[in-house]
Image (cartoon, rainbow, N blue to C red):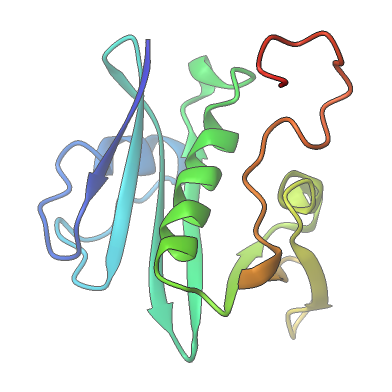
Length: 151
């Protein structure tokens, strides 16, 4: 079973940090005073994480990661959708993130647009989506017409 869990700003992140450390090589602070963090479980095991915070007039998304053994199961997509739902529920005007260019397609599927590469090279790309363009309907662009989820 797949489940999600939220951690409010300032709440201890003991369950989140091992995922971050395994994916990114660094865990970050024990409690993050600025971010909402989500954790996605696969059969009770923490498998994916991400966070969202407010900075410089926009919501920012970061640290979306999936443990290697759980990749390819849609957990990164679920973490991103949870974070976008949080932004949408707070009437976000825009959501921004930074990503390696090779991961831009993952975010573009949900409407993020790429800006200019960061100064100093093409190692990081900034992407954004206007708040009114956030669309969490998983069926709208799905090619399956015989899916039981369709009305």
